[in-house]
Image (cartoon, rainbow, N blue to C red; front, top):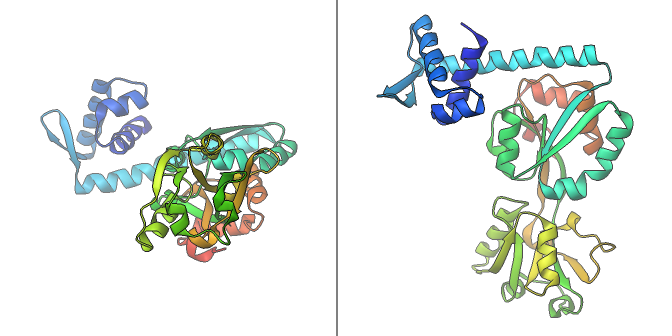
Length: 315
């Protein structure tokens, strides 16, 4: 039995039993992956994947157990590397943060600046994507820390740590009639063209549910994955924007005014996601603490060692 064979098993399962996709991710050939999996099955004396011809169709019952153990083994191998890198590298290393545009643009700059000042030898990089991409990158080990709002809680393999809560604001060009209203309502918003986030991003589900509860159908004329794009089209007069409140900066967004509408859509929680069972290096604890001061090393360790982090560490 070889670690390489275990990697092949796990990646094929992650790739939806598509051996060609797994081989591409592993930078090897499809026949090579199939051969190594068959060799491992022969050695173990059990079938991991059911087949129809050359195509894999399902994971067998013993296969599920093998995959669970293989995943833990590969995780511990990665942890050994992280331990050795931390102690051999001293203050150096690399840290990959996976997050959304809104977090990278508005919530993280001060944190990143302070982190780099504290850890000048750590190579910090940031991957921006959708919440689903962020979770997948973290689960695959391509990112160390995930920071997002939605979707992360759908991944039980990730330990979720609540960080902060935020609401939405309506942004409109100066002089827009809605700014003169004594309290913006969902009904008044529904009467205007709206520009807001793509359904996968930044509390969009809260926006949808709020209108649905009032049996209103909003006129959403444009969606985007980040607030800067939304504000650009609001400036052009294409509609009112609904964005995360942290994404409005009066100094930068000249010509636009914002009105907090958290009372209409409620608050949403930004969370840090960490892969269960991962050995955390000292500078990872530091980054987490800089982003959310209530998340001490002790609090993070308790969450990583147990379950139900969302219940234990509610804001």
